[in-house]
Image (cartoon, rainbow, N blue to C red; front, side, top):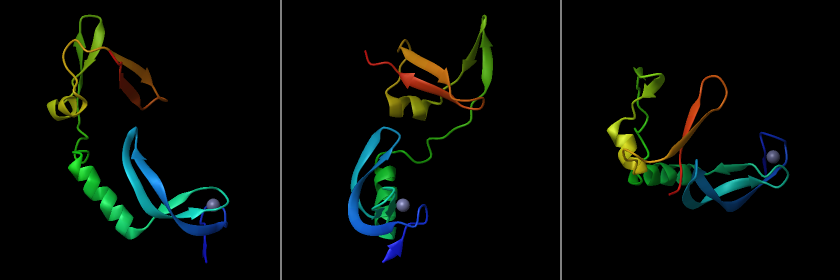
Length: 111
Ligand SMILES: [Zn+2]
């Protein structure tokens, strides 16, 4: 019997959904705590998740960008690979909001 490192509950084998932000990868084998519900993916499942992420083109998408001026506003350039991954085009509506002092979230608005 394995113990949950978060709450000392009991871990049971099962399958659970993995998602990265709002992208659903599917279900994978995991040890799931029967008390707090925390899921720990098995090594094989972690490898499969990495593979899937590569397939989906999610790795290596992080990029640095600089803030510049545009009239009275500040402008952040979005690298082409990220724009392509998001199907983001000039003129698309987005919503931006800060998440704390160090993170800016850019959300695409459904047309
Ligand atoms: Zn737990």
